[in-house]
Length: 123
Image (tube, rainbow, N blue to C red; front, top):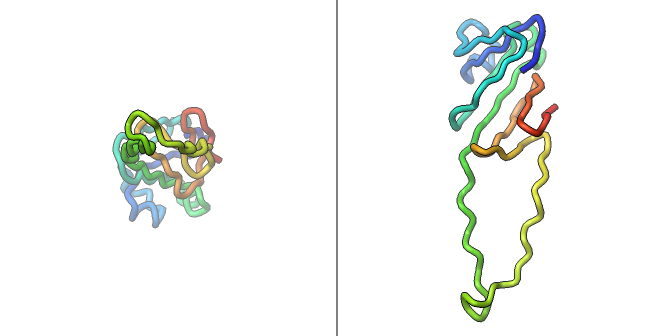
């Protein structure tokens, strides 16, 4: 997070919905904060300034587990020696709502801050 004259707080879901800055799990005020998403689940970020949070400077990130392993390729009519004809799925293109990372799927649910994901800028 890059910011001036403010702070970034990590809070629980209840404090997020109320913009309550009284009981942060973590508080950052250096203006250039990196935060490691080190587990699956929800992460809630709010501005440390109540009015900023109420005006939308808050963020929910949901880190989801790795997708299941792909199914084995089907075999053709001749058995294992003759591969089936199939079209591979089209390449996924990253968008502003979600991107795949090395640790799973990162889904931005609500956005107030600018959030950087390696190789992508989510508005």
